[in-house]
Image (cartoon, rainbow, N blue to C red; front, side, top):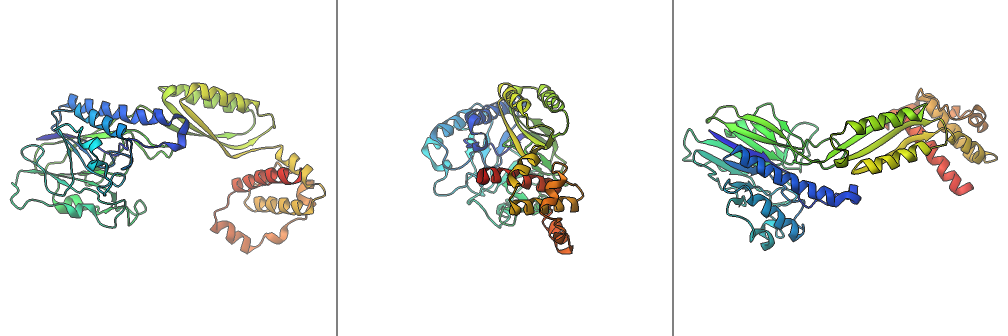
Length: 409
């Protein structure tokens, strides 16, 4: 029987430019969680630890980051740690894995998988590595695996690679594509993968992405996880335990604004109050719809509250429009036939989409003509092809108002 910890994609030293104001805190969290994961490995008394690529954000990380990673990995001693270079930190001429600032500080229990030569982490187990040598490749990395000819029948075989499973719609041809049947075809008991940041167990139950230990953004594609794997014997199904990790929470909250803004404020505050640790939460608030008034003091106050309550917050107002835009456009369009014509055409498009722009008064819409010449099969085909929605028209009107104010005021 063998027990090991499978993790990947630590990306220590990431810039976190999206959240530049708290980037240092984000970088620190990634290192702190890595240290916690190493402590978990010791507590579980695993036989070894696998890091399936992208230990570092890139090969240009500061020496300090390299020192701290070496220090963190040393805490796992005497448990062996095997590190596979990934596409972020490949074995190129400038590899971090060749820099003395890292290698000189590595403890003896840490091993960099520089070749595809099989490794014996513990008796009765063979590890097949596929180190990454470039930023991208069309080749299946598991093609590097070298299964020893004299391998014993009862030897447990574990592969470790970094790339994308060839799941239709979820991979690119130059992104280290991995055959879906690689584990079965090569006779692996387990295939430890890195590159995708979500925890994923393929339907063969032997091919696994551990996910990243800390989320990296608001896209919801990160799972903050690792895998504790136990394999009883050669050929037996792995026992895979997902370990939830992570100290930071990245949350996207979409809220429709309609009617009483107090309801919006209440909902947002309720969601924030549910957070386990607001001071470690990064929030992206997406506002959609209309505000009944141009008095947006409620939004300013909400922003102030969020800033004091959360580690980081940002508000996406690209889908948010205030009803006074109609009043603003009415004033700007007075005597300007060109602007009136554009507004009329946009209003007609919104009607064609089945959601008239209520914000625009009838006199403004009709001022430039009906725009009926636009409504034909050609326009409908264009709307369908470009997947234009009523919200896009609203955004166009808001943008038009801003431009018109700048040019005509």
